[in-house]
Length: 117
Image (cartoon, rainbow, N blue to C red):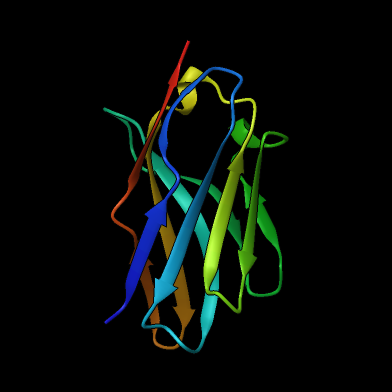
């Protein structure tokens, strides 16, 4: 059974930093992208950052220069280093892992990030 376990969320003041981690289990082969989405109250879920199996990076414009996504393939873990946090970064952050075969996306349970002004 595939599980994604997230950690690292919490409450931080504006300008502070947090590091999210997401460890995947039950997936041994064909991991493609690993990344993070977020959903704020009343808004749709949006892509924050993603890293492909080849190391290609994608970021939302709103987080470029502040957030860094990375992965450890041996540990099947993806990280999100968030610096210079802003109140508008407040949301539930979800880890996502996709596979190339079968083609499927897995989601974590979500971790709350709250940035106070």
